[in-house]
Amino acid sequence: MNRKAIVGVVIIMTIALIGLLGIQLYWIHSASTVKESSFRRSVNEAMAKVVYKLERLEKRRAAEINPFPVMLSFNKHLDYSLFITSNEMDSLISLELNIRGVDTRFQFGIYKPEYDLFIMEKSSDYRKQLIQIGYAYPLFSYDLFTTPEYLLIFFPYEKQFLLTELWGMLLISIILIIVIVYTFSYTITILIRQKKISDMKSDFMNNMTHEFRTPISTISLACEAIGDKELPKSEKFYDNYIDIIQEENNRLSILSERILQAAVLEKGELKMHLEIVDLHAVIRDVIKNIRIQVEIKDGEIRTNLQAKPSQLEGDKVHLTNLVYNLLDNATKYTPRKPEIRIHTENSGQGITLSIRDNGTGISKHEQKKIFDKLYRIPTGNIHNVRGFGLGLSYVKAIVGEHKGKITIESEINKGTQFKIYLPYKIHE
Ligand SMILES: Nc1ncnc2c1ncn2[C@@H]1O[C@H](COP(=O)(O)OP(=O)(O)OP(=O)(O)O)[C@@H](O)[C@H]1O
Ligand SMILES: [Mg+2]
Image (cartoon, rainbow, N blue to C red; front, side, top):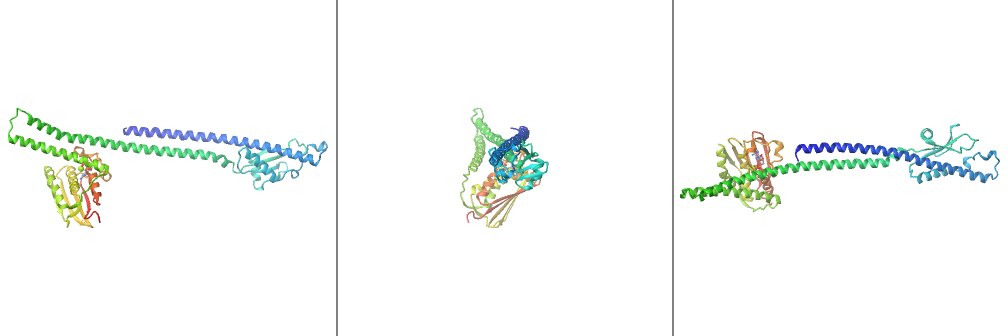
């Protein structure tokens, strides 16, 4: 997947998410309208029942008080105090509302608009709301002798009650959307990381094939020459070709050794054979091997080995490879006239080795990545320098095994300095 495809996916996903959010909000809005009308219907039903029960109660009480009513007083309703108290009224309303799932606090009052009078009420605090925005139901409308009376009911927490369930929906939607956004961005990060790794791996495969192909074809050419019956052969001829084969074979075994080392590092199976190692001797050995490469480029290696004693506890082979890798880099990444300085000194309970070059330098941003396995700086003039991106990750692992520290100072086009601290004793 290339960069464009990833950006495309991100844009499509963002649009889809915004659309989803819009639809979600629309649904929540519709749900709130439905909820409101269902609340209204439940309240109306409950109150119709309350009014009915109230009127029946009044009739029964009236019959008890006056079993033989005269025609005129037949329709006139009794005084409320004779058949219901405010508390009983409260329980009656509460019962009917609860049956219909309206489980929120309410205020009620029996109101006579003509006299602006509350005949009965739960509390006097909500009179204004009851009159202005309360639900109103006429009482005893058949009573022609009294002016109209209304049962008013008001829910102080109506909005909150309606919203509680919707808030739940909204909250779940928001949580789900956050989860989707998070997992999506996480997937994209992994995708980008995987892409980088796969790019690095294919670079590595290309380099490796290239590195192996050269010695293999040289060896095969040498063998052909030796086997060629028509070529005149002398002792010198054989020595020459055997030398070439030997040299290329060495190269191959060094290469395979490095790849094996990387595999060992990967599995975390690095083995250390600890002994007392003279670091200065190791440095001199490596210089002997690498000097020729520096001289080809018209450069020089200068040493200033001050550490005393220079012996420390460590693995000779790994320390040799470590110094080799750093000197190899210093030479490889200095295009012209490498001037390599190697310095050692005592510091704390160990030795600090520093290797400085006047090469291409490494930017601050790249300095964080160069110790990663297979990482090679992808720009500048280094693409013509061969390598696997394994050297520094190996160096870092070895420094770690020796309980040491590695630091880097570098400036683009000026040069690079690696400083490595190695303690005299790994185990105190
Ligand atoms: N002294 C240096 N000067 C400038 N750049 C360097 C130096 N040392 C390392 N680098 C950068 O860091 C990268 C990683 O180095 P590392 O030694 O791990 O890999 P490599 O040299 O590319 O391959 P290998 O060492 O496996 O042959 C290099 O590709 C190079 O870009
Ligand atoms: Mg290297």
